[in-house]
Amino acid sequence: MASQEEFIEEILNSPSSANEEEIVHIIKQEEMEEEPTAMLSLNMADEDNMETVIPNSQGKKELVFWVPALLSIGRENHKITVKQDEVQRRIEPPECLSQTMLLSLLRLSKAKGRDLRRTLAKNGLDKLTPKSAIISSFTKITETESTQLAEDYFYLASRHLKLKEINKEIVESRGGHQNFEPQANETKLLLLDILKEIETRDTNLTLMTHGFSPLIIRAVIDILIEIMTYKGSST
Image (cartoon, rainbow, N blue to C red):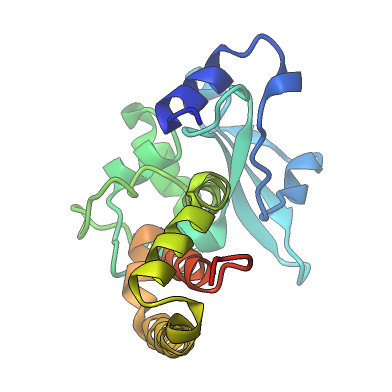
């Protein structure tokens, strides 16, 4: 079986999408299909990074940015919506994005800092700090991209980890399926209890990773449970 690097290389070099193994994300951005109203550009040089004010589900107007995706492959023109709620989460604790980091997130030039601050203030977002509290690899990606990373990992791991072979080795090393099944069931319950406790106390980490943390932890635990309970293992 091809290695992960070979798999990625095959996708990148594929002459046609017909042979690509496309990863389909759970999150649907139906709002991307809508025609924005009253669209304004913060900077003609950043004309791909538009901001607009549109009605939300409650009929109230909210600020929305359309920003180029950093992590898309083969979809260079794909844009992601960053809504006002996300901007507010990013400038508040625990992340507390500064103006410079927020400009980077929205793919805007530093010269547009004043325009951005004015636009945010008009929409009730005036809590920008001079220095970000936390800077990590997650700082420059949107919540949608963080979610997609976790989903992509789970998809690839589910498809390319040799679950059957791993299950077989584990079962055989513990005296066969009859001996292993009670251990597996007990471990499964323990993992689910751990997951429940993590999800209850993961608020700050979820905010710092923009939704990545709970999804990736659940993905790993789901994969471990799948290995332990894989059907068709030898007895």
